[in-house]
Image (cartoon, rainbow, N blue to C red; front, top):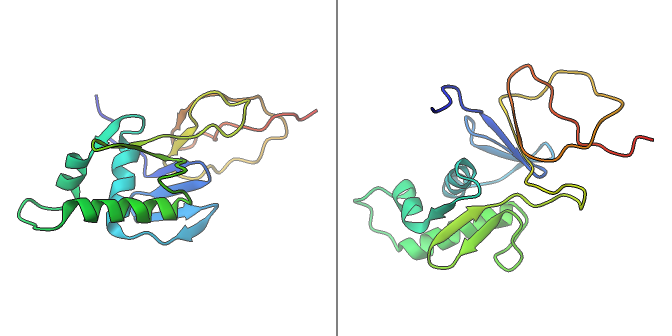
Length: 157
């Protein structure tokens, strides 16, 4: 069963992407990203952890009657996306390349205490007041409107 009202804001690492406005932000600051790299990012986020093939990306980015150097165009768009995310093919953080097959979006561990992926998906920013004491959180979560984001802080003495 698909979600009738999918999240509009997707957060990962220090980034968030707004699917409605097509904006990528890092720590609240707008990051310039062209349309094709944005579409690749959204496709990877939609299927994070799974392979998105080069052919699937070609079909999404270019109509069938478009004649382009697909390999060069896709490689350039992925390179621009990686630059916007502060990574490279040689030292990937979010985008894993699967040679001649496609790409996979992975979320890195933030510290040794976090043992699984950390992707927070939220419809909007929380409006609750900050907490003063938290428990360690491990895993991924989906946050629904009106629900405070889980606290990730530790060592509050």
